[in-house]
Length: 176
Image (cartoon, rainbow, N blue to C red):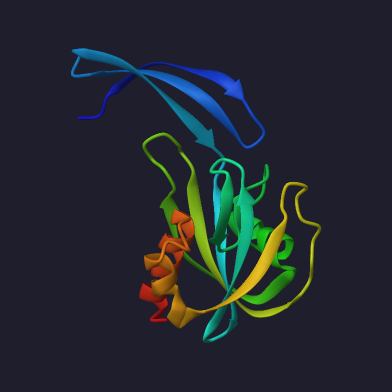
């Protein structure tokens, strides 16, 4: 049975998401409060250099205080569609655009505390078309052989869950 929403308030408005508080009741018995991030959504994209190689980016992530190896991704701007976001992130983070972008699927990033849903795309037939990166993005572009991805995940070199999920989706759906 779904809970009844008794009240919901915006606690804080931030650039990419808002912090909400929500009061709920199950079966007219237990009342409880939860906080969650109301997020506008995001996109990520697996860019293929060729059938055996993809581009990943190494960048500093301040929330974990470390570098990550991940596929290009980011939050949608206001009024931006998922595919527009994916194309923008591809250009900002790798300097490439694509003649062939394909939607794969969507996935919630952390449904226990966030409404963020991420759209997953692939990009083929890349061509140079750089956009200026965000001020906090200091990115190293790394070509990765697809055959090495499972080992990089097992070795803990790819830890970003959106990258892992997207790479697994792409390999499953596209047989790559």
